[in-house]
Length: 227
Image 1 (cartoon, one colour):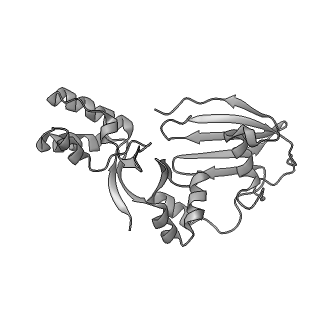
Image 2 (tube, one colour):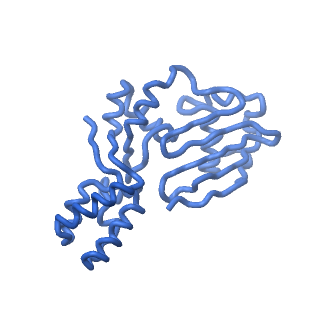
Image 3 (tube, helix red, strand yellow):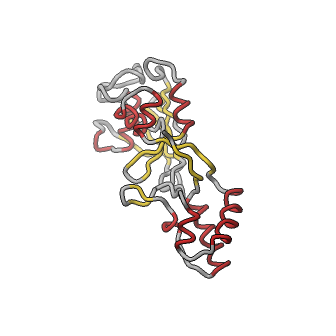
């Protein structure tokens, strides 16, 4: 069974803390309001039970209700139905390992501590996905709610465009992976590199960890970090 929570970004929680300080003179930080998964602060900054956390820090409940009501109207987040990897696997009728693989490929979910949290939109997007291999041809794409990448062929090699809306990650990076390691202009990017990934996924992995690449990887553009 999934659960619903009001999803606040780290920026939302920072604004809330400033209002608490102005209203009541109580100094709290966004990290104190973030959820924790396995003892680690949630990387997305979302907060469940923020009301109780504010009251615990000395904010009167009536004030907390007003502050949260105001914040919810302008928050970056909103009320979302969220799933664990086990729940997502049950909803889609596939294994938990396959769900984790889809998350790692950027096709669903967001990282929270060492775990993955998956939205209803992720579930529906993958439910309606046509069976068979991923897209083939000259352009290869992986797209999730929070991040994704495309791989296309050029005269000098594979051009990889990456994007992310996750905090702490670059908004848009671009790389050139030179032809080689058995792959060139004639390569079908949707064909299998190994049992875990396609050629397109492998080319992207070379940009994420150049140590695994057997060819030269060059950064063409470095995006700003999402705050």
